[in-house]
Each structure stands twice: as structure tokens, then as C-alpha cells.
Image (cartoon, rainbow, N blue to C red; front, side, top):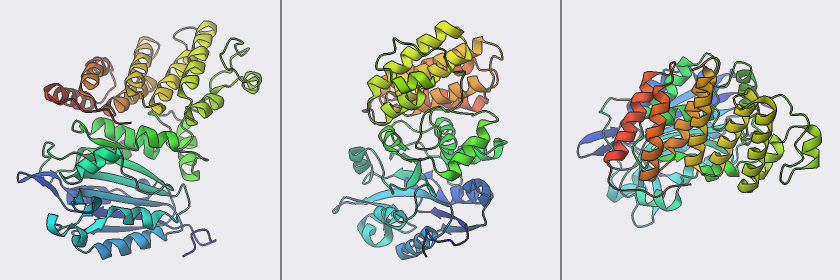
Length: 431
């Protein structure tokens, strides 16, 4: 099928449950339970689109070629596509290739009973950019985990938006019939939100509240977020514009390649002459945010941070330290730190913004909750024990002060902090 042809826009949802992840006879990840729970969500909600949609569920499949055929059929859909995979990630010990294990996959027959990971990207590579979302809830076994640690990521396809988590081997079991924390939180957010959040917002909330084990790989990585270029996909832009009118619930990232906060602020008058590296076009227009974001997107993170700090100081002097304009720039600086991979700084900037908003009119309103959610998201990206514990103690105190926070978020943050405090082995930070 010609994906660029004039055919009708029909969407597709493909849900795949692979092999269960088990350690010492305890079930760590139950893909069938995840699939059953996700299949109860209307396809239009999962896809974020009102186009007619086909839904296919694969559970208990043992033949890799069956999965390949379904992937190929899904990739041929002319409209938006969501591919969800949950299960065990394994590897061929001899060839050092990653595989998605199916029911019945054994270590001695991985190459014949599991799906090579590159098949997924191979089938999706011809799809137009902006129409494909891949959602992953995986657990890596002892053969796959070293390969993931070496690469620091799990590539799929350059044209697909990939969100998900990969838990390391040996994490605490969730129960044979339990829906995993990440998938459960994704579903809960879809049901709870009056307006569907963007996929990146859903991912950030789910990853922050899932109670992930120490060292879990969270996708996309900071490096992959910074590499995203080009226009915002039309579907995500429509979601963003509609949701923008009612207030964003989270802003560590905005759901598309254009990753800077886009909520308008009163234009400073005049632009500060003392801004280092100030661009004349920016000064005349009065809004430096696109220029600053372009610097960060091109890897010039230090310059972007310096400019943002200068503008923050300027609006503080004009509008006040606790003004909405000053808070806007504090949160922009937090997002720039996230783009640079400095999750410690990003988390602290989000916490600082949350404290100021708590002290102002409205107290624990949606903007304070959004700042706290940004801090939680960045905290979950930390993978070095000392940083996780140090920032986590401060974060728990901030969450405790939020009157409108769902208590489960505080409980999960405490549990994650406790797990890291009890963990004796520091892990290298992943960017």
C-alpha cells in the first residue's frame, strides 16, 4: 500500500504480548495482563485520533513470522499507528543481537523462537514521520541487559515516536496477574484526564508514578530527545493546541520535536541589551524563546542556559521574583537542563518553581502540580545512587507539601527513594 497516496485515513492499533518475565519462579512482568488492561481502552483514546481504527491483539503467539506479518500489515495502515509491546527482551548469546521473546522462547533457541528486534524498525521505516507511536513495557533478562547498558538505548525507527521503559533483571516481582506499574499508570492517566494529554505527557506521568526499579531504562533518552528535529507531527500539534487552552498538566517536554515551552507570556519591553549573545531579530521581536531553543537543539546548551538565565533575571526585575513571567523562565531553564541531560539541575529547578507557586496565590493549583510532575520525571531519569537519594529526599518534601497531589505519587516516590537508599551499588548515569 502506498502510504503517501490519497487513500482514506484509517488508523491501526497493534497490541503484542510476548513472553512473561520470571525470576526464581516469581513473575516480574505479566504481558498478558498488560494487554488485557490496555485492550479495554477505546482505540480512539489510545491513538489520540477519531479516525476509524482497526485493533489487533497478539497474545500467546509462538511463531515469529506471525508477529512479522502483523507488523507488516500494521505498518501499511495509511493513518496513525500505535504499536504496543510488553514482555521479555532477550539476546542471542553468540550473535549479540536483541530479541523480543515469545511464548515458548528458550535460551538455546532464541534465533528461531523469538522476534529479532530489528524487525520492528525494519517494518516501520517506510512510514511517514509523525504517524507512528511505539509504546514499550519490557523487562530485560540477563542476556539482554548488558547489551542495553552498552548502547544506553533501544532503537526502533527514526520516524517513530518511542516511549517506554525496560526494567533490569532481578527487580521485585509484580505478581502473576498484575498489570505493570508503567502500563497501569498510562491507562489511569488516559481515564483521569478530561482532555487527552500528549503521548510524551502520558509517558512522563506514567514513568514518574510507576515505581520503576533502580537503573531502569526510560525511553526516549535525553540524547534522543535532543536529536529530534523537524515540525511537530500534525496529530500531536492538534492535541497540544487543544490541551493548551485548558492548561498543560506537565511540561518537562511538550510531546513533539519542538521541545520548548510554548505557552505565551507578556512580551518583555524592551529586550535587555545586556543579554550575552543576544540576536537582533530576537530583540526586535521581543520573544527569545525560539532562538534559545534552537541553540539547545543544536547542542549549544551552555549558550542556551546563559541566555535563559539572563532573561529570567530581566523579567524578575520588571515583573517581580514571584511573577508568572519569572516562573515561566524558571521552568524554561528546567526544560533546557533536561535537554542537556542535566537531570539533577532540571529536577531542582522544577522543585524551586513548585515551591514558589505553592507560596503564591492559588497554592497547590495545576501549575504547581505540573512543576512537581516535571521534577518527578527528571528524578526518575537519574541512575546514580547518590544523586537519586539526595534529590529524592528534597523531592519527597516538596510532594508532601502539595495539597492537591494524588497520594499515590508520594507513596511511590517514597518507595523508590527507599529502594535506592537500601541499594548499596551506585550505577552510572545514563544520558
